[in-house]
Length: 202
Image (tube, rainbow, N blue to C red; front, side):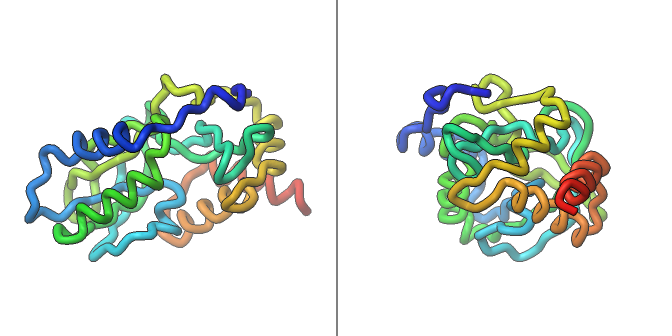
């Protein structure tokens, strides 16, 4: 488990620079697609004009990011989903109208980029209507907040017991699983984890 002091927040200037870098190639009359794989699916907090199920290759959904605020504390961090390298992931792509892109991206950066835990990338995703290029928040393996290889019993213990400003970690995991199911997205690893969480509470 990481030491509480090992997490560093980005400064306002660093976060702004990251946003400007990601939007450097954006043309002001273009809509933008944003890829959601976790809480963005059930709590996007931005207006969109379309959403589609989208398949992303090269990354998979995993509980690989320590959360010491939203779903945990410095003394008892929780876990939240990140897009870790390898495999593939089915998620939901949201289309943001061009006129809303500047304000939406600013709010999204405040939500998703308080630290350097994510690396924003423009990646190709496949939808039923063809390929799109979407903004994707991928996992930064070089951050101290990254974790992998936790034994299942340890992972379950963390998810069951951590609690942060947004509520219990287990609530976050179950809500994500429900949102995926409602979107007709099947994640076998997550469903297996949910099965164990539900069984342990039964």
